[in-house]
Amino acid sequence: MGKIFYTSLLLLLSLACFTSCKEKQEPRPIISQKSGHILAESMQRNADLTQEQQELFQNYIKSHMQEEFNHNQQGFYYSYIQRHVKDSVVAKTGDLVAYTYQVSDLSDNIIYTFEQIGSLQYLVDQQEILPILRQSIKLMKQQEIIKVLVPSELAYSYLGDTNKITKNQPLLFTIELQSIQN
Image 1 (spheres, rainbow, N blue to C red):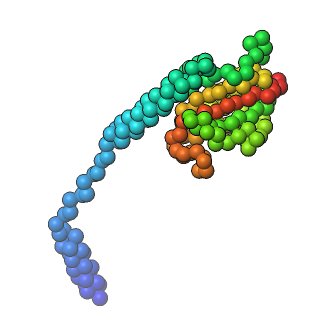
Image 2 (image 1 turned 60 degrees about the horizontal axis):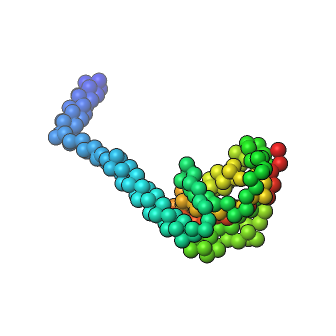
């Protein structure tokens, strides 16, 4: 019986060797995508969008010559509607501020009113709010009102608000800082 077992085992191993020695297949080629190309396209789209929005802001400023707009390093423009020059207290990290705002398009059509938004509270630099609100509040003193020309990336960006604000829409915010509590 041992001889039959070894003969069968040898036959089985020989069969396995012959069947496994058939022609080798070439490995599938690696498909590489040039991520640099996609990144470059994305950067160009963003640059074009920024340029387009800056041109819209310049046109708005030209058509509102009675208002004095200041340019901020973050890419937005703002103008004081109500300013308190004598007061020197501005919101700083940890302060609790009460504020409200109104959102309009660049044709001055109101999208959301002060009443619709209501009075809001914010712990400066300790809570998440729209980047434009966070940056604007830090410029303001109590009871001041500013008008802000907002690039889309500082507001609702490429998503919009899924209601009235479309994707990549530059906006006009009117922000009122009601109070600052240390």
